[in-house]
Length: 222
Image 1 (spheres, rainbow, N blue to C red):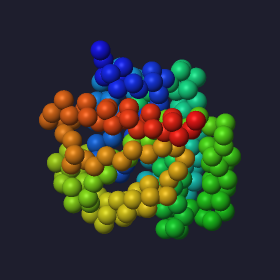
Image 2: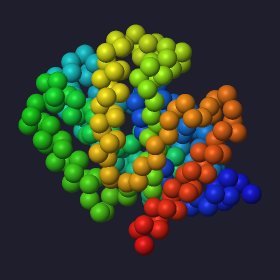
Image 3: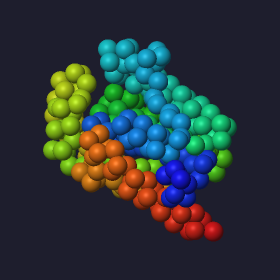
Image 4: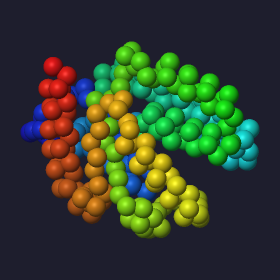
């Protein structure tokens, strides 16, 4: 019996992984997809026409970039559910508005008018009963020291060269965001409680928790 059936996880479930850089979202996405025989959904960065422009001029391109991300994530969410589910998704559609667009507005790299337009569009597209929200959002969390250690060890060169203050701010913003998030059920996992890179068997207790959590949330809906 495979792990999906063993822990009674629906074959059409959609599970989204969230968390700041360094927590291992991609590793978790691949490990869960392999163990559950689910498909993966990763962010498409290479085809983004605004990314290079954005890094050259935050003020001019932050709004364009966020609108592009919103459209692409919305299309991907629609594709996943039209396919019939059975997906592990790396990064959620909710983080863009709750963290990144808000950060640009607060730092002055997105105007108040653009921010309100973006939020209005996001709410009309996503925060409705018609939008197919995931069955579960898994939030990977850890202390800022643990996350910085991971970035130093495994991070991309660009991430390793980024000032520590930026990661400290992102860590705080993610924590503030998840503490008020309620668009779908949330399962929080501490990155120190497992090691799916060094111990492949450690993925099973995570799947057991996922199955239990999904069953509980389904009972609450009845």
